[in-house]
Amino acid sequence: MRIKKVINNNILCVVDNKGNEMIVTGKGLGFKRKIGERVDPALFEKTYRMENKAEQRKLRELCEQIPLDHLRLTQDLIEYIKCQLPAPLNESLLITLADHISFAIKRKEQGIEFVNPLQGAIMSYYPAEYRLGRHCLRMIQEETRTDLNPSEAAFIALHIVNAELNTSMSVMYDITKLIEGALEVVEYYYQRRFDRESLDFSRFVVHLRYFAQRLFQAAPGASGDYDPDFQEMIIRSCRQHYKCAQCIAEYIQNAYGKEVSNEELVYLTIHLKRINLSKTEPPPPGNP
Image (cartoon, rainbow, N blue to C red; front, top):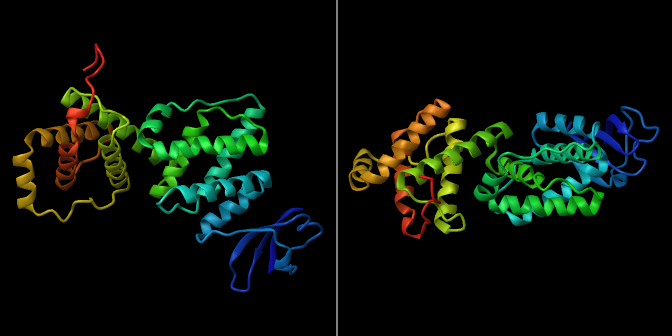
């Protein structure tokens, strides 16, 4: 391995014989080292490498800005998260989550705390990821003796969902807001409130997550193989639910300026029909 950059006394940026860049750590590993010098891999305690070159550069820059302990802690958190979720996670999670956690710890030390305005929505729409976010807070407290605001669990959950869906954090906020708005439309249309703990609610939210992702990333619709006869049959046999799907499409057009395809409308209709409304609760007094 040849040294590409000495980040500090404990961190080096090195390249192998094939030109692959990686970040390596070890106590005193960078002390009095010089660029171009060879270094024995047996001295490495930890190795961090991204497949994407742009992400590798971000990782190198991040290592220059945050404490090594925060990077190591984040790597441990991600290993735990991977064991709890079936979906693969984008490799960039190490960068985005380490950056967020390190900044959150620094803000806490300065007495600055943020409250996530979407915390309630995130708890409902991404329950598994939110539970992982709370677990991460406990691990951070144990390792750093820093009690982060409980709202940070929601921020961490969004980073996890972002890594699951391979999208950006700004898009994740849009997706979450769209889900919230779509559910309000559905509850108003049927004059019922979802049981947030029900399987039906979870199923519908999962569909809305991927539907919103396709919408914001301009990906092909999930139901593009439905033939016109099938679509017409669904529209005729599920008129009430199709009208609700149209209401969702109208909300999306007004709020985001995006068109919902006929195929997506049919797919929404099927999911709306699947919702067991008999198990939902009536809205609280004074609400539609």
